[in-house]
Length: 472
Image 1 (cartoon, rainbow, N blue to C red):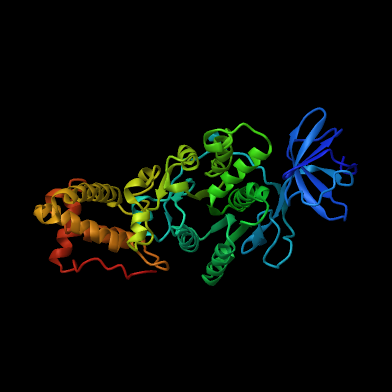
Image 2 (spheres, helix red, strand yellow):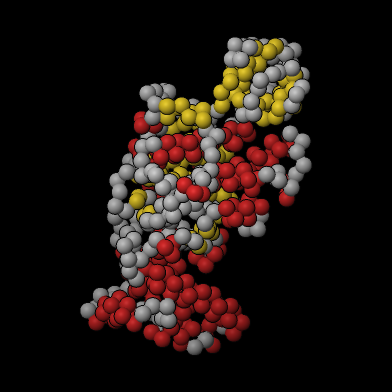
């Protein structure tokens, strides 16, 4: 089959070509396409019938002449060559080197169309992944093997946050940690920002990057997450590494699905997106996890921008159904100069309850996180009341809550782009902030914890106020 070449195609429609009279072709099979000038393009079979097959051309169909176009079916699927030397490399959206270091040799060639992990082969996610960001590590803890998305909006600093997580993340107690970073449909200046900061940070040697640019063909956006996930699976399940994969921006991926669906004449669903978008996203997100018979793990952190900041939009809505929580960025906090602008009360990590506390982070972590959530939630209620009656009419306790809320956002949520806080520092900072509230309001923590972390510090003169300058 690989030696059979077909001359002439029946139709060119957008990024698709139609070839008739083809036999023994498989769905997803790779195709070589040569135009009149002999230039080579790659494509993939996406639809098969008894009479014809539809081929999706990766680099577009411009200048293809139906009568003279040559098509060769390769009897193989979209593949990517991997080896241990892949760490520190930068590729484009189709797995081709863009760092000038040439092809990766000496490894294996893997089909990028991987499968979700069998639920029966999964191990329950455990162990805390350090990101160095207080609001994440303390209140929305990322767990090894989890899939935890970041919901952002246009203009919010999710790219800075992605780079900070990529450079600071580590699995406590293990040096065998790697990051796979995939940019999907990103702008040229964002791509330059990613490369510059990851290289300058010195962590690029433990990172594999895939960068699909906004002016690249739309079909490449469909392939980029699959190349990245295949690489992450190889590092995790064959080299026994603990891998964090960051995918940004999944909204561009979903827009590519919609654009290609319209071009194929599919009946649209909600807001024009294809009806199969849920299963398509699940086929990507469910490739994260821990296998019972492997030492490595794959943790996934997809980032998406919510159109019009609408969390009920199909993309964040479907993502939330598949994943295990979400981290939401706030435009209001960003406007007040808070970085990272994490909206604490709208964010959650559904797996953190079983992977924090004694043996994972610190014994007081679960109760302390619960108390912070309760206190900060009370702050929002008092703010609403103050908007009606005015702050001057509030009682002393309510005034203390408002002061706590201001300090919480300024000293805890807010931290520098290069600030890498240890979990112990973040937890101690929470106790110092809670020390400003009346003891009767601290109902989620025990008296022994209050005595140790608040009364004890006051008695020894260590309660000097929050200090966010300590970094590692």
